[in-house]
Image (cartoon, rainbow, N blue to C red; front, side):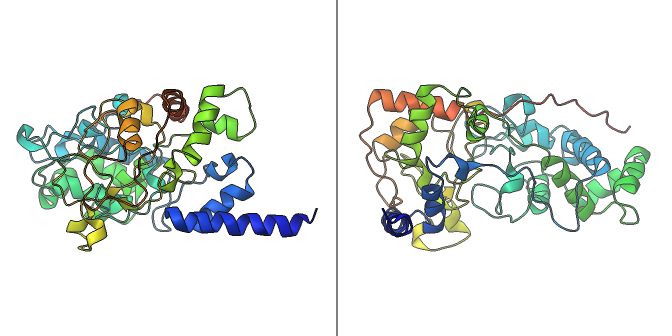
Length: 343
């Protein structure tokens, strides 16, 4: 047997398959090289951080205070944690978010879990860093309805915050940039890791059940989930129209007006997915079973449907195994102590 020739032939076939189903060939070739594919999902322990905002204990502690402080909102009663609640998988457990004056918003609250690994933020990808994202909802009239001018004046009038900013960002002062950098530093500590799946990836064959193992085979194979939920963070960071019934939200199209983006939304990470019901950008489904049924029937609305969404014809056992696999992506939960806010 000519191993090198057979291996080369295998990779050419894999890359051709990738082109047909719109999976990036480089990534799927990596899966092929990885044997059963699991090592291609190894999450790096090094969390990406920008050069001008390295994570330090002082910055994380300051960011945590700001994250839980309702005084950053126009009403003084909404904080970042109002929607991104650690007891609810860093989301809010609602179909769609509730904003200023109890207004029901049009999109679900995306969890901030592992957001540090993403190059784009929000369902429509409007922000390109955690720093940008931190200031967006804070100033959005329908969300926290805060004014940066008033927020900064308020923080500068609180001695405890003045001291905390001096420790975290010496000589930089209290500015919109340092507020954003501090919150982003805290969010970079909200990482899901050491899940049963991760333990299995590292070689512990008993970490997940036979059902979950078969679910992983379905995930990268027949169910084609890995076409979009790929790599260590289970997302291609792309935007797809998945055929949700009755969806009138333009999604990414509002930011990038090309036909393929109409009704398309960012692929969310699947890490800790069992903790973040309801699902989809509009909270359409309450259970993972409902989500899998949606994909199994090839979506509901065929207009501008992503090419990867096709009827799967999964058996009931295959669906159950997929659910077990998704549950195995729940990471080790770390207790979050609420900060004492400066008076």
